[in-house]
Length: 186
Image (cartoon, rainbow, N blue to C red; front, side):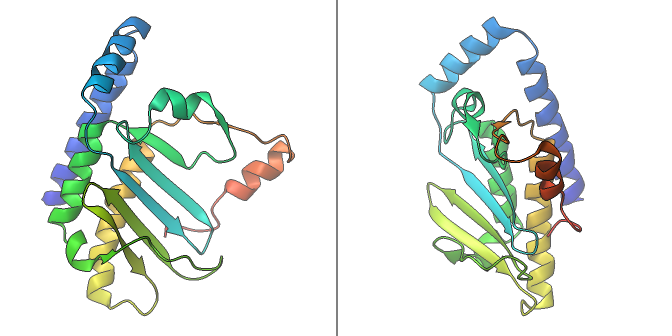
């Protein structure tokens, strides 16, 4: 029931955000000005899948201005900017689902590529915390952590990203082949 409610809230928030961005440049500019005036708490969520080397990062507008993020050419399109309210609601959902109980303080550790591990890091006003999933993680903890991971990935996948990526150093088809994940999500 809780998962269905979360998905419904996520879909509605995404639809509202999409409607706001399509209402014209003038209204978006005034919305950006109002948002800048009322900056909230900075929130960042980062998933690292060490099997594939993939990184997924969600930040809110109080962390990174969307215009600044998407107007610059980057080497990666892994960061997406979401509305403050939605990312705060996602953070609250993660906490309700036991993130704090499973989390360790500080930044997530790194592993070498091809290691069967993934991490979920959350940085906000409370500090930086993370969970780590490896083959040695107890099954009950893994189930709970997988639920957290699924919520962040669902939000990430529903968040539009307009990042320009520099692929001049590679042939285009090689770049897209390298981005393709060999298997499922972490």
